[in-house]
Length: 171
Image (tube, rainbow, N blue to C red; front, side, top):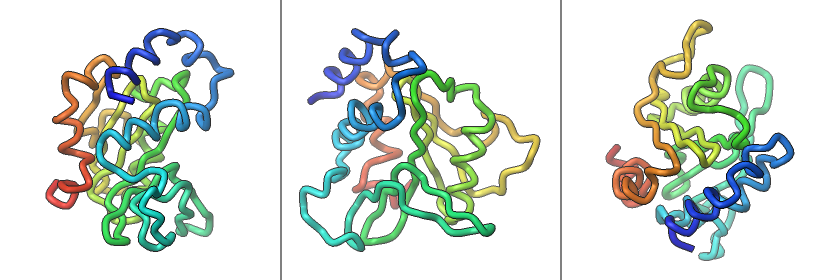
């Protein structure tokens, strides 16, 4: 599937995807796995690597502050974490949601990652995770990129710069 096909699929049934009954797991299957595959990541482990060598882990537990958190995706190169992706269903308005932004920033900061990504497919937000999250931080603080699904085809190369497995070390 191409990026244009993903965008068209979303656009053609947008109200159903935005409904509260459409869940995050379905979003990941219908859109996000394909999206990140198009960016060059081996989401489905088609290389059949061991867990320790996979590029992408799903719901890898993070330990810290006495609880176990699980970002939806962990993207890695040579077994080293590069960034997390936290998925929210499209009914969650991530482009203006303080708690979702703080959640992904906390995940990234705890793991000492440079960036992490928050997405509901309708929007894709990239956050700088180098600074500790403060209680009064809002969704704009440390957001370094925001893309609407209508921009994915046109800005594919720009998005890929942030998320490309061949370039993520340089960002």
